Length: 274
Image (cartoon, rainbow, N blue to C red; front, side, top):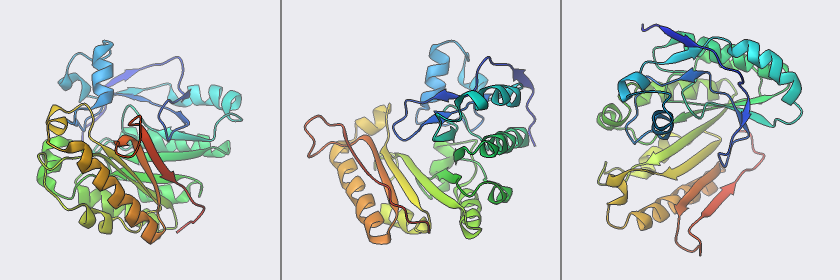
């Protein structure tokens, strides 16, 4: 089991996110051992601004040692403004194989929940079953864009195997937790040829699905008809979710046909708890 070897401190922790389906977020790790190669937007930005030097540097995570102290200071000031806190947009809260990251995540969630703040979690690691003991307002999600382990090994080399992620998510669902799936960045057929229906049927138990295209990838954008491909897949997700009473959100710029500016977003969030 790998250990965190490097620690840093930060001046602030809670901040408002510009992500379309987010509110506030916290990022208490610099880097991510999953080493995703889509490419990873977080890695690209951290490298551009000189916070990491290389891909290898990014894959050796640094833990923010004063995370909990910062939360103790900031939660009382911001709790009335926060609808929910997302863990995390620039790293992974349950980084595969790194127990210290997961422990910090659970401690942070406990503090936020104690102040009446809902947490939304997204991981490519393993969601621990002990999360079921926390607030029933929390929402637990995994990224799942395929079921093919060869593709996972190529694109998410350090992340948890798909089936392990699914098993942990299903356990939380069965324990009464709200669960969701992020199908982003969904690959074009030149990256992997697969049947979206099989993937959708596999995650039929979840409460919500977020679907989005592959961005920043020359391979994906070079696929002939990639815009039409994503319009069709988005329509497939919407039809499936409507049929099965699942909430959904289609990410910006995934749907381009039928919208004059190309920025179509479709979302439907209902009050059904399943």
